[in-house]
Length: 461
Ligand code: TRP
Image 1 (cartoon, rainbow, N blue to C red):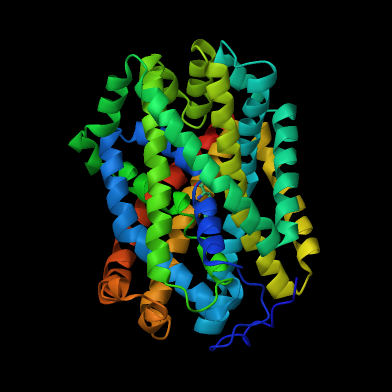
Image 2 (image 1 turned 60 degrees about the vertical axis):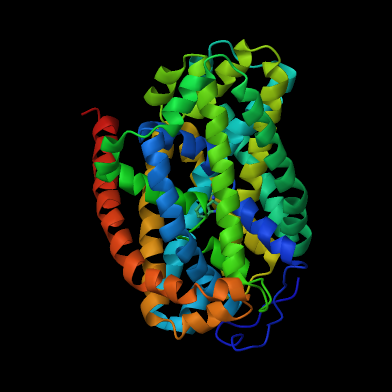
């Protein structure tokens, strides 16, 4: 691929020599591919279960609409305006003072992918075993065996190799083409599964849990920060992933429309996943498993369901294949942030950048593959705390420091969406920073407690 121009020289109205998406759909699909992944099922389902089902769901919807979409617009504007990866983009528009935020993005990308890949490894393993040996009859025990240790390491490494291979090939050939085929397939499979889950006896109880709110839960700071962080995680916000993808956009795209499309598609898949997971959990009386093992909930309850049910082997295999597909398109975006930063900052060629970043991430991830407690902690620190810090930085930057972001938002916008730009700017300046700051308070508190707890346990205290 062609080399991008040096940081700081490619702004203005000219599109630099940077490789661009071939089609408008390429971008939307790649962005949807980034957003839709393990977060929509593995993370969404256990956090929704913890947060009281419907109460969480409502808060989550508010977060996506009020915070998620404006924040996505922040990232898209900065990326498209500069055609640079996060560090260079922030340097160009904000000066040196904003470079650390870009570094935080890269570190967050490293960390998230390191454990994300472990979970993706479990997913691939279930997909393969669904076909070859069938699902385990004692899923809790089985998950305990495969989730940590040598075999988890191998599946994790396998997944990393796959991800690296796609990112090495580059935006158009690798990412765009993969997403173009895989995303619609995934969507269809989940719709099919949701319909199937509705036919299960006992599904009604699952729907009730998922869709009838208990208002008391909403007052809890932990539920609030989980809803916000889950919105960031699921929409791939707070670490420059959307920024990076938008840096491959030509300047005549309607960012507002794309942000809405991406967010609704992502929410739709998470919502549908809930319509699969909760009926299955309740139909099989697996509520206990889900609330006990948080991180492993999906990987215990669903294989258990698939093992017991008629035709479960086929349905289950399809489900895990779909999930693995979603995981790959998301992992691509995580690695792409790191890779494009290395290309832009250090001047490496894409192949070497992707390999060196991938190898380091794979090595860090071994820790999460060896201990599920490490994985949980890494998720809480990078997936909750760091994303929230990144989101706060991004909203303050675009709202208060970037020159005329409204003009950039308006570029290429159709009449429908340009009417909302003043409202969006209001949200970015006056609503996002204070709300995310409150979320950060709770995220910081909970992460602090989790770290103490982790080392307390590790030291045998
Ligand atoms: N959004 C993805 C998911 O739901 C994960 C992901 C990809 C991500 N890129 C990201 C999360 C960037 C945070 C930031 O599985």
